[in-house]
Image 1 (tube, rainbow, N blue to C red):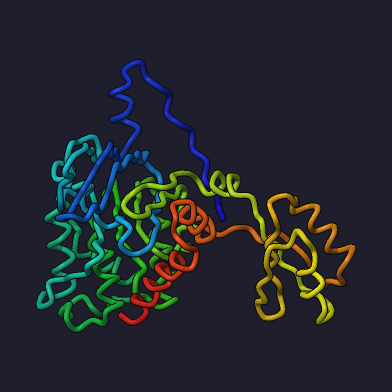
Image 2 (cartoon, one colour):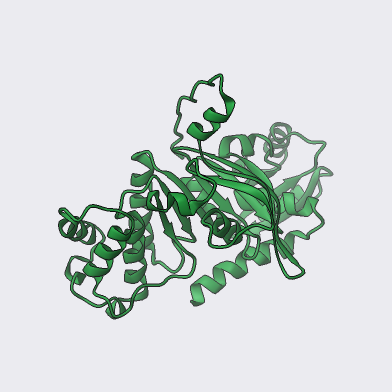
Length: 342
């Protein structure tokens, strides 16, 4: 994963002024309920200008509710927010691009007219706007769709148009809720490349996903949300450094390899993944010592550390809150299944 390094802004004597300059978004002690259901509880968050931050967690964790509060679509019961130095996103709306979870276009409107209209609503100058729209449509493979009605496009094509509507006015802040949902691999890659291009241009980006490998590939920083609460907020290297790998990948040369490994007292469990064994080791054994003992005791083609994924780390955190690993993994899988079926 490509890591980006940026200089932090020097602290000014006026701390309040520094916060306004340095942060695109601040969220402090925010709570939101819907009837008896607590959707978000005690949310604290700061997003620096130019950061790319991923909100991850299963469906229903509170990601979309948090985003809607940041966007001033709904309002918190308590707590405070600021967006681009203003107390409400409404006051900064022309500097924000937003792709909501619920996709929607003006179905009877032609694609080119729709994009021009949305850009002008956000304050984009009309000069050369049609040319700009044509250029963007060409970049996403929709050059022949300028005069087509939005309802004539496929779901994936509509999603690309809606992404363009979020960036057409060159916003300072992009907020994307499940931006890759329902896209095929080719269009997912295209959108990802455009997404990263926006980030290289210095724009602040927040995107939410329940597919944790997407955040793993893209983000400067990860915010994990579970049951309405932020459970982790850090960079990927920092997250991994706090969660030591406790699993080895072992490819034995003989069929007896698994039984031999399982007889070792410091092996907690083994999972067979098409002939490659995932060996979970006990806390009293270091991975380095485990590798050495395996090599000395079992004929192997290879043995290596399995780096924990964000899903593994999320499951570990959720287990600490009393949830079973299987329930957590199932909630993540159900989100992916629902997306595929849609």
